[in-house]
Amino acid sequence: MKMCCLRRVLAAILLPLVMVSTLMAQPAPYDVFPEANPPYYRVRYEPSTQPGELIFGVNYTIWIPPEIKVLRGVIVHQHGCGEGSCRSGLTGAYDLHWQALARKHQCALLSPAYEQPEKADCQMWCDPRNGSGNAFQKGLADLGTKSGHPELSQVPWALWGHSGGGHWAGGMALLYPERVAAAWLRSGVPQLQPNPDRPSIKAHQLPEAALQVPMMCNLGINEGVADKEGRFAAVWPANEVFFNEVRSKGGLVSVSVDPLTAHECGNQRYFAIPWLDACLSARLSKNNDFTLAAMPADDVWLSPVTGTEAASTKEFKGEPLKASWHPNAAIAKAWMQYVKDTKVEDTTPPAPPTNVQLKGNVITWDAVADLESGLASFIIERDGQVLTTLPEQAKNPFGRPVFQNLQYSDTPTQPLVVMEYTDATAEAGKKHSYRVLSVNTAGLKSAPSSPATTKLVRAK
Image (cartoon, rainbow, N blue to C red; front, side):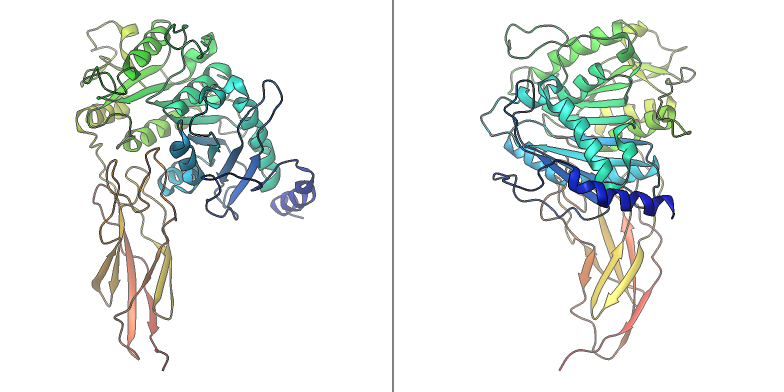
């Protein structure tokens, strides 16, 4: 029996023994979510009343590239605090752009959704010491059993977090530095010193091993950098303290200020994904032993923390341990573009759609997102001429328009959009040929797909 088949048989046998509560008793607004059929998998745990355990219910959804036999890591997309942000985690694993990053590195993409009531204390999940760290690791083990990928309990983690999710991701990097390949902290960092203004937030220790974990402190300019009086003005002072503490000890930490936003995620994914790509390329083991390599030091660049220009270590004029760290020249260039206007350059078009099919006058297709710039829309051609663009008007209130649209915490909206179009203007009895092109958010078009041809016969 082949190994992949054996794993599925074992998963079917072991799954009834996995003591998880799936989809039971989920309160609104956490009771509306996409189905999780392979290559998606889901587990859910009820709130615990045991001391030190997670007091909120949590729903973990994972996407595993179906062609991958052994995973090399897991990318975690962690939402922020409050019902709206927590609910947005229900679609994080379905994001085509983040899936492109996961697929490139033979990783899974996991999105938690903590069921925090609106008025409840977010620290009870965003501090991983309050039970969410252990629940996360249990979730990986149970999802490994469910999917036939037991290595999920051992693989390294690449962590992305927004707001309270940044607290969580940074906290996990401090608690488990040997497991974390990199951490992107959007608008939230863990505390390293007690804050008398917020005594309920416990300070973390900074272990020496965490200094080797690449970390990016990413925030909007109106989170205390330019706007020092607004609702989110405290974000920059917290980031500044965290950065100075880590960097002064030689930590691989950076700051990137989004010039267009406050607390919303904006266009950060167009820098976050290439940055994580560089870190994963350098750190993930190629031998499936799940150990992490050290980041190379031969092409490091530095920049002033809130500046806009970076230079190689040989050319940098400031104090290195007060400067942002960049892993290489390509990322430094992308950083310079991002902090000026968020227009990170992309010169490579997306791959063409595949599996274009026709059933009657309904056209369907598959497509993978462009790693650098995701997917904005599709162009549908009929008989060599442009028939329509789908969607006709792409939306995203927080940044570049994208095919899936985006919520506040950088996840697709519900219901999920589908790659499907009904040609209501096709002529009955006429043979038509259809092709589909992908368009990324930089406006670059793919080559056309292979054609699908049919003779449309309308029912009388």
